[in-house]
Image (cartoon, rainbow, N blue to C red; front, side, top):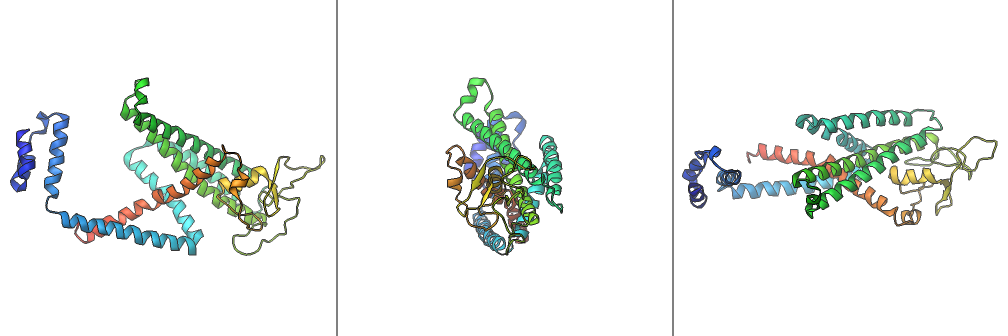
Length: 327
């Protein structure tokens, strides 16, 4: 390793040639890492100005892209949400096939098949009375599974960082891989189900007629009807309907408790399904154990940008660097 140390100190073209002539088979793993590290430094020596230019391009692209995305979301929210949902659904699939992550691919196919069926039911006209509750039950189930999976993954990562995995004789790399995998599964499918749920909630509510994304609803809401599912709230013994607890918003509109919770948590809506008055989520979820679900939903909303748009922005930066001859 004396030659390697001499190369790291001396540098230059001669040092780079000496690094290329080193026989890696005779070195230990640590020495091989040092040689590779020295080769990388030798290759990029003297490119400081180029690297600074590439960093400026990255920062400028991130800022401009963020501004454009915000404007797009504000001016054309429907097209923005549809494109984001498509990217969230397809981009990980590309890396899955490329890197041969077959377990993820199987789960992705199962989730996509059931979600496609539920989405098909939600977009039919006329809407079957049982469809809204079917939709909210499916997406609420995925939401709870993703929440639990993400928590377990996070705990596994924390246990590994504190060395608790050694109590169970588990290798740190295995424990960390397990935790990161569960964390990714939980966050990814949590984001995906919320986007599909929001789309389905809009379709169903518009079809029922008590909700309109822009403008006035097509139907008048009576006190005895739930605007989310369109069924009677108070049912006589001889009538067919859903018997469950009700919830009254601050605007005095009454809904099935399951429906309005599905509308707010799963469907990502924070307004009344009929009059669009803002819903006080802190009042709705007064139980401290339920409030983490709201914070988890906000985390998923932030993560959507990271998963859907970050690969596109990085690809755009690489394209700009390629056109300008920066490597």
